[in-house]
Amino acid sequence: MASSETQRIAYAAVGAALVAVATMFVQLPMPAGQGYANVGDAAIFVLAALFGPVVGLAAGGIGSALADVLTGYAVWAPFTLVIKGLEGWIAGRLAYGAFRSRGLSPQVFAGFGVAALWMMAGYFVAGGILSGSFAAAAAGIPLNLFQAFAGIAAGSMLLYALRPLRKALAQSKGRPTVD
Image (cartoon, rainbow, N blue to C red; front, side, top):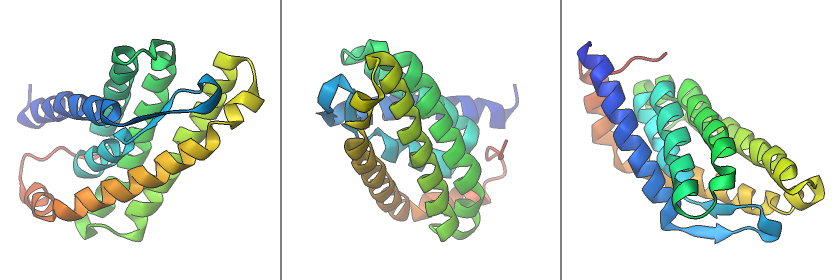
């Protein structure tokens, strides 16, 4: 196995653990049994911007689904695996190259915004399926919107603080590539 492939697997595994912990750290229950809001999106955005879409996909999906299982929301885990995995992939696909070359830029924020919109739409549909009522699912929209903004803000602050790491990753020869 190539060194960069080994690194990507390691980043995804450690990233999944970080996402799970961040997701479990703060949980705000949503009305009508629509799950919970959390700060795991910040970790997903940071990992996607630093390491790309494959790491964003694996860490976001696996870490978030694991948090659901460990905190009593196992019924949501299959939906979360897909929703948060694709959120990480979208964020990585749209923000990774821009972040590597220019740091925090409008393209990075746009990538996070598109990924967050996907997350909100995904949980609206999942909530409607699980509850049998899209009216009940709509009750979760305000907290999902709050979660999206909080994730973008916290993730951006973390990425700003990690500027030296971005430069080191961009200069390393064995860095993971965009998929």
